[in-house]
Image (cartoon, rainbow, N blue to C red):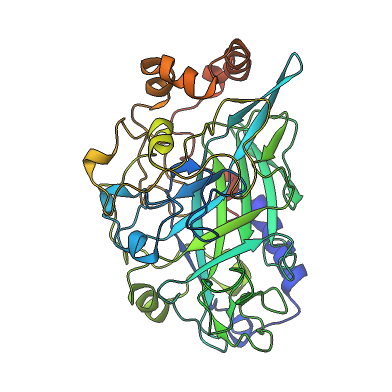
Length: 438
C-alpha cells in the first residue's frame, strides 16, 4: 500500500510541483478534501433536467441523490426532497448528480444486447482557502455540465489529467492496479473499475447555468490546479467536485460503452445543498495531512454533516418507466434509445411532492454514509426490484419492450455464469487500491 501512495505522490509532485505555495514550503497542507462516500443510483432514465424540462434526453443517464429526476424538475424540487426519497448519504446535500449510463455490450450470435453496469459514486469536494479569490459555496439554483474534452479539462491534479481510469485486482496480500489517462474500458476483467473526473471551479459570478449552454459560465483554472489562477472574466471560485465512479459487482472485461456512444465522458451537477451549510464547511473545516500529500490529503470535514439514516434505494425500472420515460434502460436488444426530443415523450409529471404512494415496487438497496471515509460505502443490500419487473410483471414487460427474449436470457446467462465465484462480501469495503489514491 505504501508503494501505491508513494508512486501517486511522486507523479503529483512531478506534474504539479512547478508552483509551490507558502503552506507547501512550510510542510503544511492547505488543500481540503471532503469525501461524500456512499451514493448508490437514485434511478436510470433518458432524462436531463438541466438541458430540457419538457423533452427526453439524447441518451440514458444514471442519477444519484434525489429521486426527483423527471425532466420537469426544478431547483426547489431537489432542494426540498425529503431525505427518505433520496440516495444521498447526507441530509444537508440534496444535490443531483448524473452521468451517461455505462453498458456492457454482449454480442450473442450477431445480436447486441446492452446490459446496464452497476456503479456507486463518491463526489470529492476540494478547495484551498490559501488561494485568491477565496472559495464560496454554489449559489442557489446553480447547475453545470462538464465534458472531458472541454478547454482545460485535460489539465488536472489527478496524475496531471482531469479524467483517469484504473482497474484493480485484489489479491490476498497485495493489490495490482492498471492505470489509463482518459476514459478506458479494459477488455480484461478486474475486481474494481474506477473512473475519476474533475469539474471546473472558476465561475463568472453572473449565470447559474439556467440561461446558457450550462457550461459557459464555468472555466477550469489556467494551471489545472485547484489553487491556480482563474481566467479573466471568471473571478469567483467554487469548490471542485471530482466525480468518482466505482463498480459494485466487479468488472467483467469485454466490451463496454457510454449510453451516448462517445468516448467523451461528462457529468451533470444540479446544486441542492442546504443554503449556507456548504459555506460554513468551507470556512470552518481545517486541512488535514502534509504538503507532500498533494491532491490526496486524508479526508477532512468529518462529522459536519448529518447521516441520512432513511436513505432510499434505487427507483426500480418499472416505476421509472411509469413515472418518467416509458422505455427500457436495461437488457436492451439491438440498440440504445437515442436522440434529444426524439422517440418517447416524458410521462407527464404526476406529483408535486414525493410520497410513499408514488412508487409501486420496492426500491433496491440503500446508500450508507460513514462506512468508508476515503472510498465507496458498502455494497447495496436489500431486495432487488429486477425480479419484480421481469418475473412478477413478465407479461406486461414483454408487451412494453420485448426485452425478455431468448437473446436476452442467453446474454444474461453468459454475463453472470461466473458471477457467484467473483462476488465477495461487502465488495466495496476495504477498497485498498484506491484508498491510497483518492
